[in-house]
Image 1 (cartoon, rainbow, N blue to C red):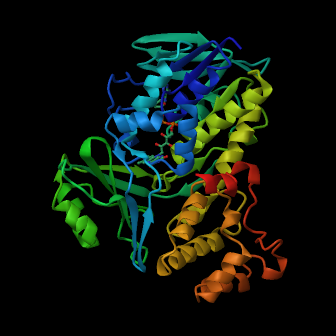
Image 2: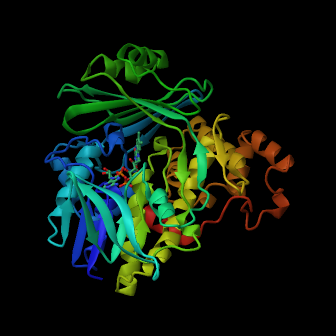
Length: 484
Ligand SMILES: Cc1cc2nc3c(=O)[nH]c(=O)nc-3n(C[C@H](O)[C@H](O)[C@H](O)COP(=O)(O)OP(=O)(O)OC[C@H]3O[C@@H](n4cnc5c(N)ncnc54)[C@H](O)[C@@H]3O)c2cc1C
């Protein structure tokens, strides 16, 4: 393999370039934006103004791919989680989750800029910025990728390559490009989230000392009340988001935003707001639906083509999984290539199938969480059984963990929600019995009795057959977790 083009220099594109550079001497990242010299939001990633949190798995993989990254972020001004905790507030109670490590918390531009510096210091990787790819070039006879067409400045250009990785993010045009070339695109799977975010940044005094790293304030009993997440980034800047799904968009004007915060009536938040100063007006972000594009199901897929990150599947951002899935796919690419030792063009199709396996549990979890909201619908030919049951199971387990002050159980839910542990670690007969003893299993037993999920007598090895078994190899074994 002589040359790989990566379209898009976001998190997925950078991680893929880094991994592929061990197997190919010439990697070219083509990025639409002019890449800024410092850590700042750029037009191609408008979502980057909004909080971007890493899940434990995403953090773990990034550290493996870029050793010392966490330390570097901390050295350069990221907030530290050392000795802090995460505070969750629900209508049914509160829970404090200790932060065991010294993790860096920072904005998405800050994280991406640090990764980009590492990637671009690699002599095998070049970047062509301010260049928009407009089409793929395919050898139709051999069904094989040959390169791309692009507009660089005002000039139309073509660049040849043996392999092309599409990492063009949420608004990826890959489906259109393939369509124009005569490929039949599979029906995408959709979740109509109608999500709205509103984010405001605040400057905190350097003397600000709070015992927490993140506040999560949720009020499911009143669906119109947005979820609020407060987190600290680099350089003593705080970010507060109000987010909601189902078309109930949070206010994006300064006055409405502050009023919505006051209505949450949360003492920790109120105390904080006395000490911080807004830096600018809030900024909104809306997402109509999130999409699993299912390219892995295409009967014909060009050799040498891969799609990674949001170009393949997008998620509801409130679950904070998008960057994790992107780097999980890059990690899978690395492991596979380390095993086979060579980068073969036919790998494209195999990659899409393996990448889909990584997406599936996260997508399912996203559907489980969001379809609990009556306005959110799941659209696909194959209906997914068990979504409602899993939703209620997780909600009741959270309630149990909060009511009985069980941070470890709460942490388990969090790890299942973020592709670290299998859903089967959580949704099993043992947990159901625990909920029954606590008087919290009523809604679950109703669903079992109504035939929504299989009767207990059909549960195998204590596991509900309607909860998918995604394959244990996709998750981190419990033993590794206990050593973390
Ligand atoms: C509001 C919001 C909040 C989020 N919060 C989180 C979070 O807390 N945690 C988390 O893990 N994820 C979060 N995400 C998801 C996260 O942003 C994405 O999953 C992640 O950025 C995916 O990376 P990517 O490289 O696939 O896409 P992106 O990072 O979007 O990068 C795509 C790149 O491709 C470039 N590009 C596009 N088209 C072309 C073209 N034709 N030619 C050349 N270049 C092109 C773009 O300019 C861009 O640089 C959030 C998303 C949103 C919308």
